[in-house]
Length: 330
Length: 180
Image 1 (tube, chains in turn brown, red):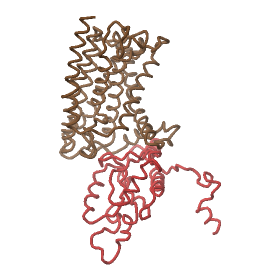
Image 2 (tube, chains in turn purple, cyan; image 1 turned 30 degrees about the horizontal axis):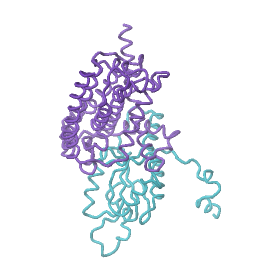
Image 3 (cartoon, rainbow over the protein chains, first blue to last red; image 1 turned 120 degrees about the vertical axis):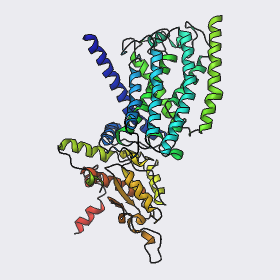
Image 4 (cartoon, rainbow over the protein chains, first blue to last red; image 1 turned 90 degrees about the vertical axis):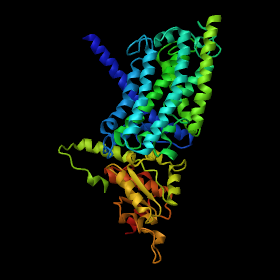
């Protein structure tokens, strides 16, 4: 009974954390865009505009729900849920500190990637079921993009697994504790010596940005070509769930990058390791993602797929092979 | 008017209604839809100098399903009229319409005898909630239109007492009252 309650509490906290981040990262994005474009951004509603996300949420929930004529009703309704739920499920396995983790799973890495790739199915459902040519085209684009960028991302995660010798996310962080030179991004004194890790980090970062449909890779929602992308027929909270799912996926990507490469909750100088270091690193990565979105223009679909199939996948494969070789030599 | 089409619910919750109204007023997402030169002023309103994002209204949605506000920014020709009507019909309730500029209000400079292709005002075929005059109106005008629409949506004033807020410069309205 107590075990069940503990698991229930953990899941509730995971959901609340995902929803809180999704709501307030939208505000961070809008304020960040404002700062980059030399304007204030939403700053009137509440102190620093902090009431803007709840107000938007209230409006979206109170809006009329339209199901288009001829849409596949079951798929149309289930698509936003299929985008949001797997994203929340991934949070259950993510460790934020040595004590702050919902469930310590031995195959945590596998589980996170399994759930992260399920979000694509929701996008296909949305594009297919809304009976709109633009949404279908956008969904097909999103799928080709997700397939193209999942491969180098998972190969890079495989490189990490090879070095760490485990798929337990907790254990991966534990190997990088102490200070900056033990982190996987630049392992000079760690248990493993691999000069290719900064390169792996770059591949992982680009892939996590493309996986979450972020600019400059947001071809699935290119307004100039596809009106609004795969969620064109979704109003009210259905659209809100797609939006929240996207931001939850950004948090997952940044969290994984922190766990794999930046030493999780360990301090760069070996002082006071704890959850605060994790949050600093995670939000720094998220800020970089927002910064990139408002700095670079969108790529073309050919450029996007060429980058993955011609550069990232061969590079990550070579990286994996060389890592295996280096592991054998040293 | 958009909000009159919503069926009244059986259970009435006054506080919830007020909260929902304030939520609606503070996130009026316009449709990315510009017809003529007023659209240039609309873009300037979204830009750095005037920045309508302060009021939470900068989220220009490309799809009518996600928009709350249809800004008719420019001359409505007879060829364009069915398209605008379709866009309005595709927006989910509650929705509001703003006629921006003289052409959208009454045909403006096109309201002449020789006119054969311009619809004389958007209110001939759409329920317009708010009119912003000007040819084209300045971005400040559009901002004031949005603030007035917020009052119309929620019976809630964003700027409580304009005379107190700008006490050093009495407003035009206040001066006119004194003369009377």
